[in-house]
Image: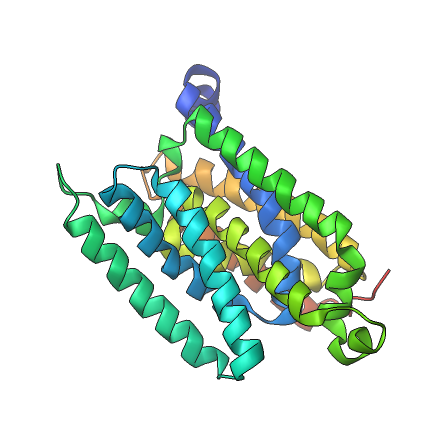
Length: 279
């Protein structure tokens, strides 16, 4: 751990990695609460894997892969939400379709991209040590968009997540806010790609929020605790992976899993689960 702390002082890429952990945790912890309460974790995973199509197309065209990821993430979120609401298709079928086709399209375009062959590992599992200053500014912008959206639509999101029928009776456009929520989830997925990659996004989005759900009595409390847990988990994973040169993203997810397991065992044997309430 001493070597890790020294590297934070000496190396700029480690400082960028630490900043990326903290920035990703803000959006991850905030949006993850809605994902857990609404039980759309696998849907978030489907969006994450669809993103590879955007990254592959953008790379083929010589553009920024992250820009392609943002565009395709938003498009897939809108399409999944619209098809589910209008055509009443099964959600698992939608996820499987977008998941498989999105990854296939991404692999095809990446394989045909001019120049050297791209290592898919960095896209699938992330590489936090390569985060640049520009990436950090982009992550800060996404965080600002996510937080502003949650603040401005807080009541509508609560109504959509907890009681759709009551929300409709009060005149809330549930369908629009549901799709809007999926778009916010999509932006958060892109935010996490740099940290843990496409494969592991769902774990870091869901596990800290699910852990917080057992100890917080309100949605706001869940969000605050989930953000704090995400920060602790990502920084701990970064530190633990440093000395043995382990994959940082995978290490973070393992830490998140252990924290969640510990929380479950504590609730079973030493505590009780609090039911989130609307503040």
